[in-house]
Length: 414
Image 1 (cartoon, rainbow, N blue to C red):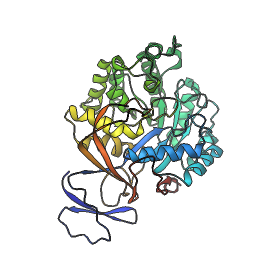
Image 2: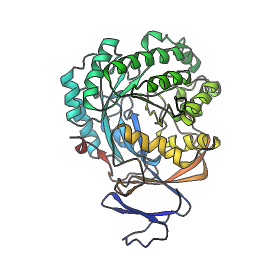
Image 3: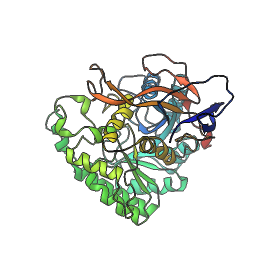
Image 4: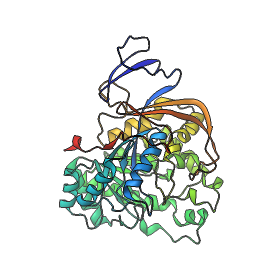
């Protein structure tokens, strides 16, 4: 990485040349010392808050995403109304996202105990880039937990399609009922052993079916060795975590503040350190990274909603650990794009889509105290100064009203 000039033509990167190169153009933008990164590809994002129209959810979430440096959302099937578990529901999401999106959107199809081979095949034929399921309440009532029989059958079907199955791996049988509404009560009711048991179930099914599985979110760092062992014997498993699990230890969370509530819950500071170890240094047989990517885990109204602050929050913590912008882009853009087959995204290279982010890694900012995210009032390092979707600039403030720049990504998968 270093000084360079990037030429954009018809929504694609036409060339990446030396900074001093004379590239003919109609318009030039000089970013000075600011870094130009590939736009984030955020996998497993919910867009709709309870009581909100689906179209409003897409409009609001994609604007917040653009302000945070995200240029492609891979939308979770649930929580949403309707949940993306049928082609009719997928069409509803296509309609809601077609006219007023600030970024690109792709879709995951939901797998439930009622999903049959025909339903899954229809969703894939109509353009989903993968599927998602839960072993507990990770997707809410519209994405009920799978037992081992349905998990195995679903994986067998997904394996034939060559796309990933994204799994919320907390096991329902290991979860308790919180004693009260506090964050500490939620933590006590959802112990790490629920993730361990769920992961064991997922890996057993994946080994039998050959399905490509992706754990999202991966939180219980004690399970990294299980992931590493599975990969060592050839099970195609990957995992992502979220910035709040890397930045916000349970010991420092206000117990009564709902802005910090998520599933799985925020865990201890010791777990946070071990999770960073799994992301940075890995625990695989050859030292390869076990947890390979980071997504916002955005859940408006039902969990942590912080997509706008994901990039600076992650950078604040990563820089303290000696990481650079190359790692940041690998976690948030390159690997997520590879996971769901978005071959033209995830890197600043000729031929790729001109989905770009101007990011100042040295500037500090204070998140407004009125913000509804857990970062309210916090001082973060790094600021998104500009976002381009298919080469067109999107306003950096989510309350501004850009003309639509993105929309559904389906045609490439037919």
